Length: 524
Ligand code: CA
Image: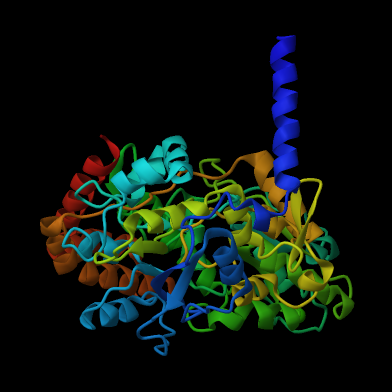
């Protein structure tokens, strides 16, 4: 035992000696010797529509790997503000151009490569990873559910995903200073929550003598639908709105369940009583900023880091305090937080089917799963954007002070979701304020998160069924949902007709192909 400890200590000392050697002279991450290898890349993301060769992160990656990425992005100038399109048009344009670059990185690349990869447009990665990418291989061996989730219907992986780190995304937030002012406790149950929202509406907590408070508001209107969880319904099975969900090993849709019906009935009542923003469906992304700054908004369901930042308003609004609260218990006593960071995104990068250097390219992908590469992808360049302190990457103060940290990182080529990499939550914790950290601790203690549906890859026949029916089913679901909330129709009276209509539109067929794909992918 003693000998083992001694050996370990020596190895650790040797490892430490190696890491203190300047990386430049070391060269252990070099993928090719001699002349640098140039690989072309298409990179599309709403925030960085091309791959910039002068990004410090690209420059550092060149130095470490001797592989140079050359930007050949097609369709970079296309911008779109609609919710679901991402940059798929740019990918289609690239495909139509007849040339697929060596590397293709994009948001929403998963369905695209899973469709066109098996036809030859992208290389299958499984054997390449197995033989040439020890770090990727290790990652997928430790996380087989992720390997299953990204695999296409033919069983191959065609892209390396962006893998978010950290569990928590959204939380319930409430004006705790208003609670104190009105002599109320933080709500523990859905009944309490309703009472509090009603008190916000009727007891003038902002003190201007007008019933102008907006008790529940949201930047994204589906965050109102999220509240059906308080009546044991569900609004989505993943971090994507309106998604399918897994119930006892089977795929179902949340908008066809009884808890959902009960939730919608009650939310329609809340809406009619003014407990919910009258403009919930139209106010849009400025809702949080406007309603908090104007001292009008009472409660919402939104992201930890960005929402906690509004406590800065305390300098303008006397006593302002907006804190995370635990999810109120549902009518059956369940406390769940339906939203969480998904462990895997449909974003990332793939190898073009005509790439002449697949081995070097998979080694390059593997580089970003080494310790040095992962740090580069997360924190930028050592000495420029961060320093190593006690074995941790710590951002330089001037980098933190330079504006929104996410934006600063994109601008140097870090935290790119069009790159396959494993995020390190340590990057975010450094600029989360005390309110966010306190809230995360609260959610951690309570263990409110639930498992997520990680998606399926259809074969060609399944895809046809899905494409034929799903659009109109979804449209009908959302149209009815909004009508019921706004008081056009009564969800209980309409329910049987609604379910019959969903069936007529093909819901059972869609569920059938979802389930066959799900079974193939996860029950191997
Ligand atoms: Ca008022």
